[in-house]
Amino acid sequence: MKIAVTSSGDSLDSPLDPRFGRAAKFIIYDLDAEAFEVVDNAQNLNAPQGAGIQAAQHVVNAGVGGLVTGHTGPKAFKVLSAASVPVFLAPQGSVKDAIAAWRRGDLSPISEADVEGHWV
Image 1 (cartoon, helix red, strand yellow):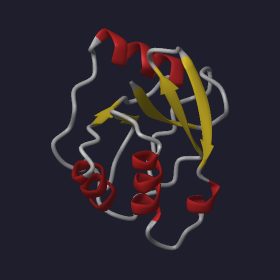
Image 2 (tube, helix red, strand yellow):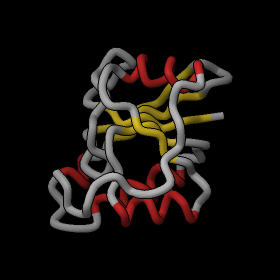
Image 3 (cartoon, helix red, strand yellow):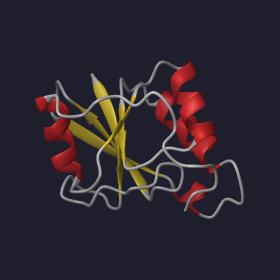
Image 4 (cartoon, helix red, strand yellow):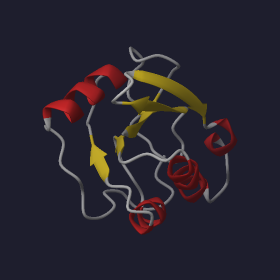
């Protein structure tokens, strides 16, 4: 199974990006193969609107079974929920820390967005 983790950089040691729609990058991590790819989210960093929806669609298209991020707005959460992609919040740390927390079962899925729209 693959999971997506919002990231500030290109490696597993990069800090988790607390934003979802305007995250710098997504690390798509394959838990079975223990391999990852980096998906750039630059097109949404300065988007005047729709960043969360577009980012959610990219994550859904990556075929992930879950998303780990710091925060998720209502429109992005709706897209992810409709695609049956559960959202898990990790408050801080590195991408590697978030993956380890996922593996340990320390993260619980949220049932609704945790920030208002257009949160930066």
